[in-house]
Image (cartoon, rainbow, N blue to C red; front, top):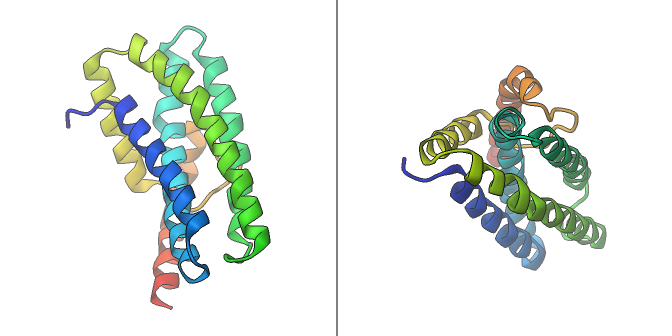
Length: 179
């Protein structure tokens, strides 16, 4: 794989932005499917960042701990909002309102992440390290939960709890799809 982690994560941010619009614009009958795609990408993306990106910034970048801590706090808040949103029926005014609030929070998180954390990755890691980190992020995504789990934001917690939560989430998703 030749892509670096910053390009990879920025592409995911663009996909997340597009999925918010798709979910908000979807008809009532299609909104649940669009939201499921959004929820899955958000959960997987944030988990992979928590497992691989934030710890690397914390270890390798001068002042990286403060940057990583700020992103983790934002991710915790977004996970809580996403978990609440999962319990609101799609197609309702309440769902749309909460989705718009989540969209604003996620976009407010992505902006400093790209401006601060991603810039630090570009300046502090060489090309090979960024490519290896992209591979590590993709590996983490394969075992990441597909639903939000507020309170599981550290790399350690994600490694300890993540695979089990992922197995349960993916089984729930499969059963839901079969129903």
